Image (cartoon, rainbow, N blue to C red; front, side, top):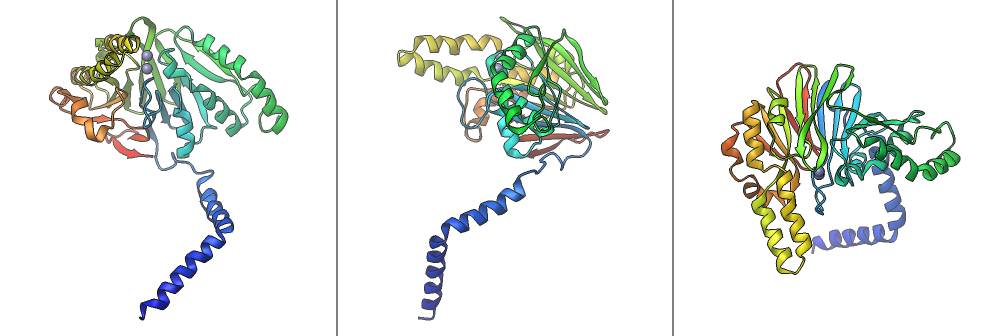
Amino acid sequence: MRRFPLLVLLLATIAGLWWQRVSVGEFMFGQIAERRAGRNALAAYGDGLTLIFCGTGSPLPDPQRAESCLAVKAGDTLLLIDAGDGGVRKLAGWGVPLGGLDAVLLTHLHSDHIEGLAPALLLRWTGSAARTPLPLIGPPGTAQVAAGYNMMLAADASYRTAHHGEAITPTGGGQFAGQEQPPGVVWNQGGLVITAFAVNHAPVAPAYGYRIAYKGRTVVVSGDTAATPAVARAARGADVLVHEALQPRLVAGITRGLAASGQARTAQITRDILNYHTTPEQAAALAAQAGARMLVLTHIVPPVPMRLFEAAFLGDAPQRFAGPIRIARDGTVLHLPASSSAIDEDAL
Ligand SMILES: [Zn+2]
Ligand SMILES: [Zn+2]
């Protein structure tokens, strides 16, 4: 019987909250929004090389993975390597401030690496009142991608300048400046040196991987490629090799399902993709050959819930590379402190 008044009190409280649900919702949302808006998810990491995996998927639809996207922070420099669909919006949602974005580097011009570029442009422009175009650096063909985006977004940019004014969204900031670069050093500022090297993603040519060096730390990103010694050469002694990965034994199940359901053309596409990607086992062998300290797999094909299928996806990879192998998820963070040998792992 003594519990009865407590129960009445609890029910009365719930009823009261329900009755006032509009003002309760407004209050709670306001509290959360004030805390979340304007936060800087990168503030926690000190000087060094920080990688934020914003898209670890491929063109195959995957509810857990955006298309290819990797943010690289080194000192005051913030770059993106590729901007596939959904990746940049994930960064913004995690509280990564994109007003300070200095440039976007493209590995190649497949749609899953470029079709999420528009939010990078908009968020950098509105976040910094930039007056100059955002550099878009990549292989031949990059200037055409930049010009195409500029044409597509010209009306949008003019509306925003008209609406918010020159002080907030100045003319000229809502555009890309395409820079086509041959293999070699494509970025050298503030101690950050990025070198493009050719990989093998035929018939996509040229396609680049990037070697990223900052204050004694080195990360190599393969881009999309079949297994190639060029990656092992570029990754010699690297702290981290970030390599794309496709597991043919798991893709085979999708191929069988498509063929059995009469989707012969799509089934053939799943056979065609095998010859210009790298298996986890091959990536592990390249990491071992290079003497890299850690292997991180990304551009994960096929889309599978990894906790359940991680072992099947990796296959024999752990037997071919003695160091740690990670399967990147959207939100995976690696921080390599300057002049250190630590590799700190985190998640947003
Ligand atoms: Zn791709
Ligand atoms: Zn590709």
